[in-house]
Structures are given as C-alpha cells and as structure tokens.
Image (cartoon, rainbow, N blue to C red; front, side, top):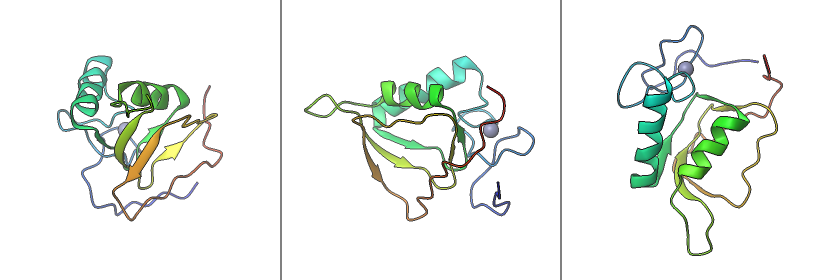
Amino acid sequence: MAQPTDVSWTTCEEAGCIGIRLAEGRMCLAHANPEMQAEALLLVRETGTIDVRGVPITRELLKQVLDACPRGSDGQAVVHARFGYATFTGDASFGEAIFEATSTDYVPDFGEGTGSS
Ligand SMILES: [Zn+2]
C-alpha cells in the first residue's frame, strides 16, 4: 500500500506511521495509550471535529470515534472530519454518521491493509 511520506502534518512516532499526532503527546489516535485516546475522544465530543489524517483506523477505533461524536437531531453522529490519507482496516462501517469533510484531501483508503487481526 503506497503511503505518502511528505505529509504536511506532524506525524506519529510509531515507526512507519504517518498519522497526525494528537494535540497532546507524540502519537496518533491509533497508537496513543488508552488514556490519551479517551482524552482525544472527549475533545471530539466537545468540538465536533476530528483530525485523523494519515491515521490507520481499525473498525474498533472507528466505532470509538463514532461513539464519541456529538449527535444530530436524529441521533446520528455528526462530525467535521479530516481523513486525508487515513486508512481503514477491517469492515469499516460509518453507519448513520454524517461526516462533513473539511479537507480537500479526502482520500479514504479501504485497501487491503488488514495486517494482524
Ligand atoms: Zn500512529
């Protein structure tokens, strides 16, 4: 799976990961420890935005993100998301979520990067 290496954001310290770092710490959402993930998801709930550019998103992580999203009038997740170069592994389902992509580099990759499972 081709990955860009010259991305415009500060990347995660995990080897080979181009995920954008969380506001706190040096890891992306996927590689942060559970406390930092919880903190980041709290922020998603508060702000209604998430920036996961380059982050490898598993089905489990996607579910956590969707659970953390603010809800619209119909109970669906509503979030302003930046998914540029994010990769989705497993059976990613966005369900009823409404994503308002705020980035022009919206390049979801549902490729075969399933890795270990
Ligand atoms: Zn990472």
